[in-house]
Amino acid sequence: MIGKMVRGVVDRPMGSRHPEYPHILYPINYGYVEGVFAADGEEQDIYVLGADKPLERFEGKVIAIYRRQNDLEDKWIVAVDGRDYTDEEILSAIAFQEQYFKGELIR
Image 1 (cartoon, helix red, strand yellow):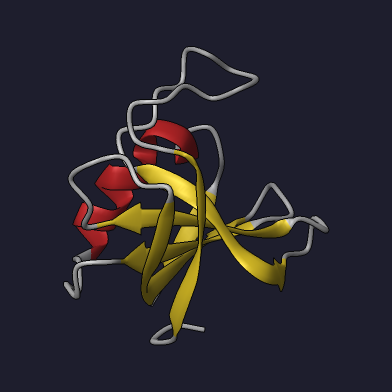
Image 2: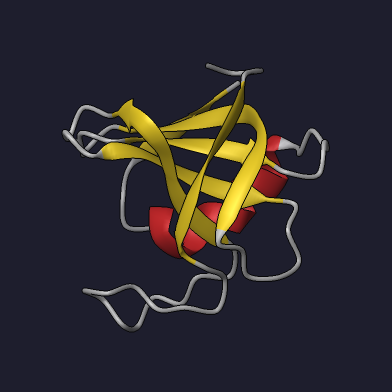
């Protein structure tokens, strides 16, 4: 999937709180790719990089995948601004939620 263009819905825009864990604030947009299903049976989750405001929808390129080792889900990292972020930039951007999981960044 890395390098592919995808589009979908942002269901947790930047500035919103996690519906089950309100102490988690989303500093970036988070959503899913419509019609692509992940191992958990839900539509594929994504982190959106490159937006400076809350979004309702997105279109961008998958630049990496965060593979959770203690969960069923992989999270796709999507850049909507055409940038190719460094590993450090990606890991820093998603740490607000991924700090609770063990995983690896795949490029």
